[in-house]
Amino acid sequence: MKTAAHFDQPSEFELIKRYFTHPCSQALLGVGDDCALLSAPKQEVLAISSDMLVEGQHFFSGTDPYRLGYKSLAVNLSDLAAMGAKPLAFTLALALPNNNPEWLAAFSKGMMSLAKAHHCDLIGGDTTRGPLTISITILGSVAPQSTLRRDMACIDDDIWVSGELGDARLALAILRGSAETECVAQSITEHELQQIMARLECPEPRIALGLALYGLAHAAIDISDGLISDLSHILTRSQCGASIYLARLPISAILIKQPQTVQQLCLLAGGDDYELCFTAPFSARSAIYAVSHRLKLKLTRIGKVEIQQGLRLLDHNEQIMYFDKTGFDHFV
Ligand code: ADP
Ligand code: MG
Picture 1 (cartoon, rainbow, N blue to C red):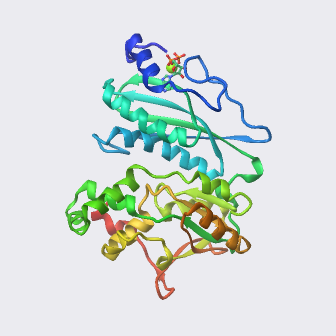
Picture 2: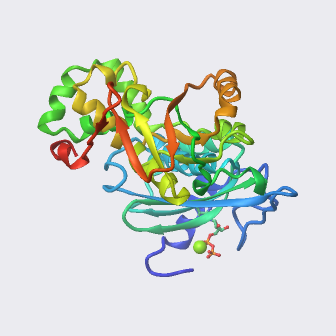
């Protein structure tokens, strides 16, 4: 569509050609025509998801463009991982305040590095002038019987999480720089800061894990809004409850040095972890540990699905804890 809000034709088309036209490995036809052409592998269905990142809302102004490109695709790949789907292709709708070539080159490089690693083709999109907004729609493929849905958790399933939780939220606290976080920042070395910033800005989508959980997990979700919030989605959709053990939550060597209130907030309500939370029967335990070993990815059993509705958090003495996110408002 040609409107006043669009770039002048030559620069818009030049920009698309220069930064967003790449060879495709899976699609029949990619960028440059009215539509892209793509078929799903035989016997499989398409898994489709969109995520939008808005400057000031989902990322700070001045975020490194390479990392921003990388993360924009990573959060979409993470949705495919949580569904047990294999990446195929994505479209990119971009609103740009200007067409700064250095910014665009770095953004495209970050995004395409991850796209290539996952054989996920950029097949089209739209480009317009406006406040910096990145909207990706991703397509993956999955055999219908191997999808990892939110509504399939069963009573007595173990609850698992991948990796470690909370580091991204700790990095966010430091970036926000409130009075409390100055104390946090002082106890963190420059090297540790780099590590947690990478967790916030370059999350690793757990595609291989999602695929490996075929036949093992009943339900899964990726942790984008925090463990409590995202696990609650599984429980609500599956019409069951759960208990999780605070002492079992996988915590990093960096976060464990923080005050307990900070640890709990980051672990439980952090967000931006992009780890997978999944449920699986007792009978799958040894196979899941084998997956962990093969993928060199920590997988931790943190609790159990129960018939009693609601999510219970148990402390070191197995007593129910009341975790109220609003109790940490100064930190949010
Ligand atoms: P139309 O007017 O038919 O929608 P456009 O002029 O918007 O076409 O886009 C031309 C081609 O470039 C299309 O194939 C479109 O999918 C692709 N495209 C536009 N913007 C992007 C982008 N940011 N990334 C990838 N492909 C893009
Ligand atoms: Mg268009």
